[in-house]
Length: 98
Image (tube, rainbow, N blue to C red; front, top):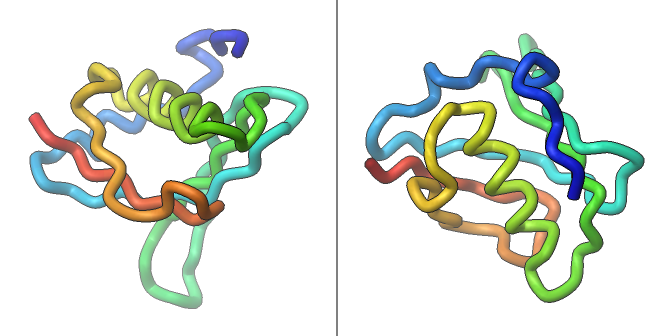
């Protein structure tokens, strides 16, 4: 997995609130690693995250890549993120544990 430069990632440090749940939609085997912010005005939930990673969805490789990329954008350690739901799903929910 190639590391994207910090300037290429959105600043998600505002999500680093203890106990905060972070829902993401994952696309594995993409051409590049990226985090996209998608506005959801019709649902009233504000912004959702779509994360694309180059890792294949086998043996947890894609989930680990998503965790590392999300942590990098949030400017925290990957070990501070815990996967709550979606180990084998494209829709995942991470929780920030400080």
